Amino acid sequence: MFKISFYKNANGWKYLAVSLAVIILDQLTKGLIRNNIELNSIGYSVTPFFSIVHVHNEGAAFSFLSDAGGWQRYFFLSVSSLISVFLFFYLLHTDKEKKYTCISVTLILGGAIGNLIDRA
Image (cartoon, rainbow, N blue to C red):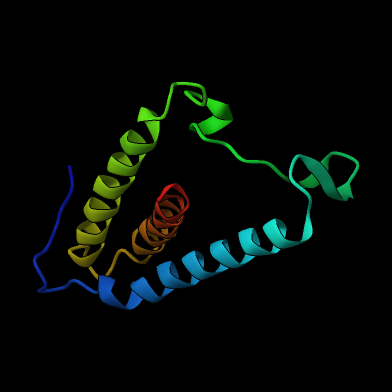
């Protein structure tokens, strides 16, 4: 199913810079929204169907488990941590000829770590 090479042809290290860029951009944009848009208000209407808003979601996608009493924060922290560690090692062991796989994994890793930062 997965062919993972152990450092012989691996080149995932150089893609970690993309993950770092994703994490930095994620945190910068969230900081801009926190500092410039009032909570629970529509800040900027970009198009008739797309607006930038400032809301807090304590749950998962679409506020799933948002009113579960607090345990979900630790659950999602654990899940994000495990996924991030798996993706990190998967990236490091991915064959150098699989550039699109490396880029895809790096973008997902950056997003997962960004979510981990937000939950912590």
